[in-house]
Structure formats: structure tokens, C-alpha cells
Image (cartoon, rainbow, N blue to C red; front, side, top):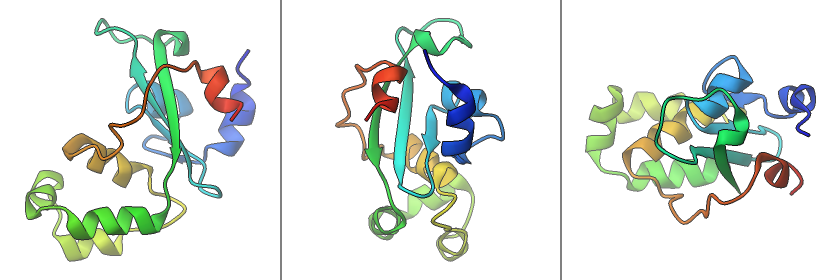
Length: 127
């Protein structure tokens, strides 16, 4: 059984104020202290579900240095994609709050496509 109260406390870096929207709609949660990042994908392409069991998960650790390296190597098209100039975007980086930046990068080039996405949320949380 998933302890959502504990998740609320641990995963403070989100793309949305609510844990559920960040996880199930944007597919990302991050622990700002450790960089532990959870990605979620629907098991099947169907109507949006609000049940975390309809998703598969994987995780990796992502820190600010990795994000900076990706942003330094990424094409200028990315900054047009997000609608912010590179210099301004780099100024926004904050190690405690990278989930939105990671989501932008994942939407554009997805350097984390090596992940397996075959775990349950319980399995990912036990790592």
C-alpha cells in the first residue's frame, strides 16, 4: 500500500502543487534533497486515470549539474519550444526545484528514454 502522506513530505519538487497531478498528469516527482526522480507512464493509452495503479514507473537520480549539462548541449530549438531565452532559462535553475525543467527537457528530447517503466509505484518507492 502506498503511503501518500509520506510521499507528500518526501517529493517536494513537482510540476504541480498536488502530488497526484504532478505524478499522473505530468509523470514526474522529485525529492529535492537526494535528486531521486520518479517518472510515470500510463500502462495503456486510454482515458486519463486518477488511479496510480493504472501507471508503470521507473526512477533515476537527477541533479542540477546533469540538467545544466543537458541544457548547455541542447539545441536552440528547445528554448523556442519553452518560449524562454537560454540565458533567462539558466537563471531559473534551482537545485531544489528542477521537476518543471526536467519535464520540459523530457518533452523535447527525453534523455531518460533508457528507463524500463515496468515497476509498480510500491517497488519504486522501496528503492
